[in-house]
Length: 87
Length: 401
Image (cartoon, rainbow over all chains, first blue to last red):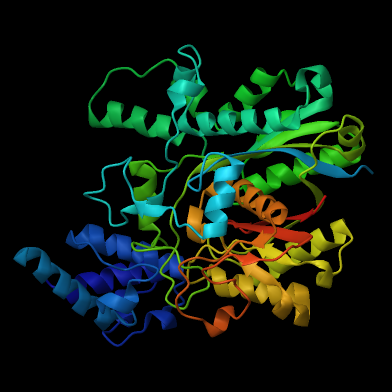
């Protein structure tokens, strides 16, 4: 599975932009996504990859999960998929 | 215009099922947030909440009534009985001169959750005939009307987490204007169902560890449950019959952000506090204490701090501001009622209730938040803030009687 391709598709859909305009370096803040949009994106990612993303009011601080850029999301998803398979 | 007083206070809450129990808990700074026991938590990320304990519905309601009562109606009716008994008011005699106005966010969600689980999960072919009269958001209010013979205005107010403050505020306005002589008012909520918890979890605003309002390491809100119900009354009427006067409702202010369905707005919150002060005829420096909305989310607490500073100016530094949600959790549509009860109980007990679980000051929440320990201090005037999803702000002012 090409995580990067799928994450870009989901981010593009949420931000209502063309996937081709996104790269690993695209920051979510540059896509004008509000916090509720990011929460919806997290839900879409969990559904797509069948993972639990520990993203919450206080959890960003402790789990090392960052949703700063597209690349951050791809790395987080790969890590969470690997953890699920190992479990 | 009439002055409006509270002559009865009933409480079913995680901090106790009577005013006396709640006073002890508030003064001790007791935290009722703990692992949930009433729902299976294996597949929940958030496994904590503030539950009502030692509430024996079967001993309070007979076999004919109990099957008609969702958990939220049980709380409301039990709290209403306490309030009506304390007030000594003959509501039946007042008839159409009495109102009942109750706030609730979701109503009989326990009933709905069980019904849907049976139908969709277990493949049941039918549901119980009491499903609808139990789940309707107005059911708790209806039972209070029926039990007390209240034949005046009766309705339920829903504005998410501001429901109770809106209900109490409207009831106050009706007594103030003379539309009714007395009202039974407050809020009730019993949202600790598996489906509701999953919904809140998905919003990513819940703490999995503890509710820490105004603390830098705050990690989100924690759900609670319960009911706070008051008898409020025309002051002259209450004085004439020698009723106990617990406090005066001095003012009520409302505003709407008209901006975002979930994010708070300092301008809207400040506008509601200013409107409340104006309605009460209070200057900012006459207020001693604010029972904050204080949810413990990253967004609410600094926004509320800004709003308090905007409404109170430099005097904000002299105010005591605490979030009792740190102890009893966030009871959503009942929150304002439970918090008004906490405020009135503390006012009459001569102490300011603390913000519990406070471990780390946050420069963005730099008010006197009364960390961790109640402060023994008499006070005369307090505000109680409620700010809801959807941008609905409702603030009550109470004055010592």
